[in-house]
Image: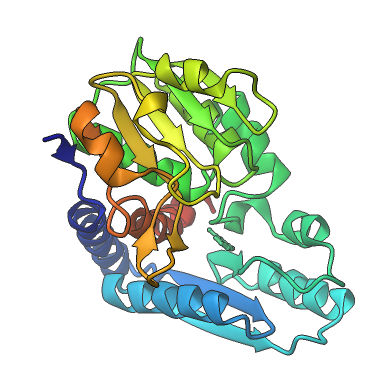
Length: 280
Ligand code: GUN
């Protein structure tokens, strides 16, 4: 059986390290504060936002909560962001996505001061990652790098295939694997011969958004498989983009769903918040 890469254990370690760092900052008279903005009350977003606030409480980061009505205008949201950009006591600003359809997400992200962009979504943060300069890194791909490193998976020189090219996961994931000296291929919905391309991977990162799409015929014997997907199946059970039962016997290590990549996102958000203090 493969090594099961346990995101619950690794995310707990990271949160404990952040908690220690936050307490050291406090001892130097520096507190850490994250402003969390949610527009509307999408139930999934409310769960994520609730979990982020809980994690803040655990690591000792203060969280300020802004729950705005669905009808909030773009101007109102931008004004709040500008106000939070100016507040010295606010270190990080997080606008929970997706936003209601009448709001331009890109403009909202661009309004956040890059020094407070703990999600790592601002074009300046993405550009810095691209050219190897310091800046915030998107939490889910940063969490995947931690999962790999802390599980003893070497990245340098490995064939890495990322399936999915979203701005939040696929693209930054490819850049981070490249930064770790992997040989990186980004595959997507228009990739020809996807199975053959995926089978080249020593490290296969799957973020396609389709339940159980990746079966063993996409996976090279002994590959490390990272599953970013999260879905509910016919029986209301959580599953990923990877068919875990089918793929497990052929790979050397795999992340489960739930309990793999999922918990890492919030742990890395806490990490980014604690680091924001030194960037400011
Ligand atoms: N919606 C889903 N994932 C995320 C995330 O990592 N950050 C924000 N701001 N919104 C999200």
